[in-house]
Length: 171
Image 1 (cartoon, rainbow, N blue to C red):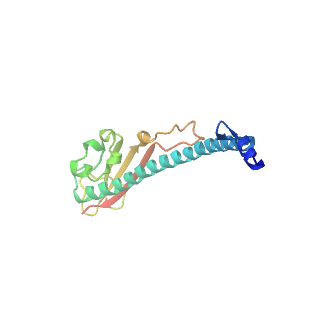
Image 2 (cartoon, rainbow, N blue to C red):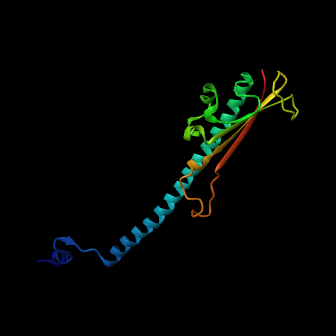
Image 3 (spheres, rainbow, N blue to C red):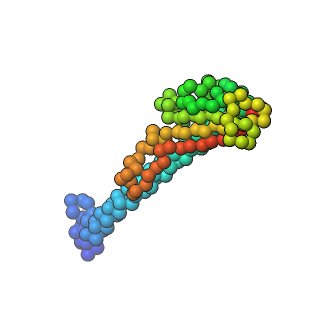
């Protein structure tokens, strides 16, 4: 038998090639590094998804305030000139203008305030005319959108109340 074949047979134990101790330790080190880095990457991704959900809800509230202000200006008196209501008590046509993502819990998380003002003043009016304007303010309780713990996660606090307002001239 040649030296090469002897070395080859000695490097195998039970038909399996022997792996040097250095290579085995390197594999273990790689697994530990992967476990550490993957947990950090997962945390960063979850925080990013959380901010995306809150951002989407903030955009929906802003767009909803604009759409409801336009609806109130075109249809005076249908939402009441000066009132504060939950989204569930809005007319069905007005509810259809809102995103379904903010109509959670049967619309109880969303509060809509409608006010009518005379011209450009801050004097409220109960019978708006064509030179008057309507102001719609919306407040959304975003606590249902938050799935990460805010007090224990790197000191990050997520917003729980989102607000938006818009005004339109009556037509």
